[in-house]
Length: 237
Image 1: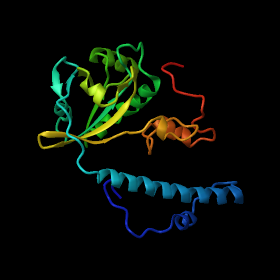
Image 2: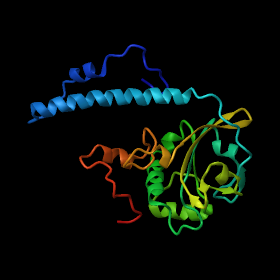
Image 3: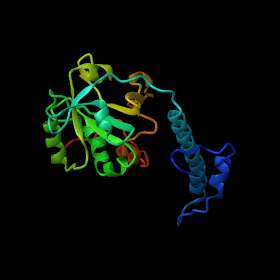
Image 4: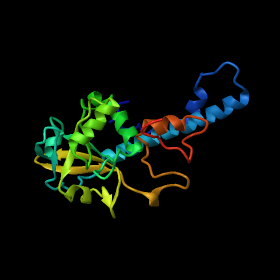
C-alpha cells in the first residue's frame, strides 16, 4: 500500500493477523511467544492508526495564506517563501534552535537535522526541504560542514515577522518548529504544522509528534530501557 492509499473498510482483526504470523525464535518460551504475539497485534493496530492519522492530515482543508516572508540563502540573496519550493508544490521547513545568541545549536535539533541530511536527495524527489535558522547562513553552514552534512539547504529569515508568526521565539525563548507548506497557484498556504507543548505532553514525556519523526527516539523506543527520563543527545561525547 502506498503512503497515499486509503485503508480498506474491511480489515482482518489485528489479533487474528498476529496469530497467523509464523515467525519463531530459537529457544523462545511459550510465555515469550504469547506476549510477543499480543504485542504484534498492538503494533499492527498502531500501524493502522498511523495510516488513518496520515489520511486525515492529507484531508485538511486549505490552510491560511502565508505572508510575504523573506529569507536569505547561502549566496546572500534575498528570496521569498515561494522561492524555497523550487520545482515542487510542497515544502518541508524545519526551524532549528540556532539563534545568534547560541554558541552552538541545540543538541536535539542537531540530531534531527542530521537525520535529514543523508536522505535529503530522496526526500527532494517528492518535495522541497529547507532548514531555517536565526543565525546567519554562513554560520549555519559552518556547523553543517563540521558535522559532515552535505545535502541540506539552509536559510535565515529577514525581519521578525516569520519568527513571531511561527511562534519560534516566545517570551524571549527560542523553540524548534516543523511546518509543511503547499503552493496553491500564486499563493503559499500553511498545510500542517506541529502543534502542542507542555500542555499536550503526557506525564514523564517531553512533547513530541505522533508518529515521532526522530530516528533516535524511535530506535530507543525499541529497546529495554526506552528513551529514559534523564538522557538527551549531546554535540560531543
